[in-house]
Structures are given as C-alpha cells and as structure tokens.
Length: 148
Image (cartoon, rainbow, N blue to C red; front, side):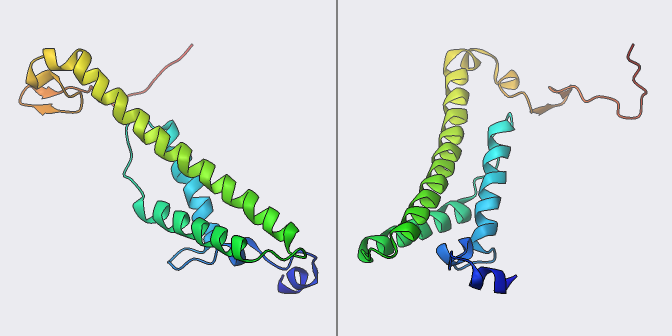
C-alpha cells in the first residue's frame, strides 16, 4: 500500500496532514470524532464530554493552519487547498458537537426553570430512585411480545 501512496500524485495522507501525538492516529481521531458526534446527536441524554479528542483535534487544526500560512509556495497550493478543506470539515464537526451539547444543557435548564422547580424534589428527576421504586418503568425483558 505504501508503494501506491508513493506513486500517487498526492504525497501526503490524512495521517501526514494531521500529525498528532496520542494513542489514536489522526485518521482514527477524526473517525472517533464522527462517532462521538453522531452518538451525541442521537442520544436523548448528554454523554460524557470527550475533552481529549476535542483538544487534540483543535490543536492539530491550528498547527496545520499556522504551517499553511508560513508556506506560501505556489507549487503546494493544491495541497494547501486540500488541507484547508479537511480543517474546515473537522471544525464543522467540532462546532456541531459542541453546539449539540450546549443545546441539551439549555433544554435541561429551561425545563427546570419552566416547570420542574415547581414539582416536589422527589419528582424533579426522572432517573431518580426512591424508596417506593424507580421513576422509570423497566420492561420485562424475559416476557414474550406479540405483534399483529
């Protein structure tokens, strides 16, 4: 596979463009960001924040952008254009991920301010365990289900 990369007209791969330090390779970090972003958007509750992933991709994007500003060679314009496109794609994913998290926080705060603060403390959280039982009814996973 390396011979095809060396023989191609594109001398850099995504791993070369985003040369990051860490356990995951840069391409894997972008793939992980896509998975984290999709999970956050499709989840009803807020998932744990991936600070390591967000910080490493933000720093790598800034580093590549600084290198692009330094290198103003006319021969590398096409590579710079590809790098700029990849940076913009990652910035979009990061903004959307953070915007989704902020939206969920705002909805939760609005729900509390609008009506939850008027309920008794024992009924303000849906996932709360009380002595009478759980607020959320768990289905019987061993019972058969019939659909017609």
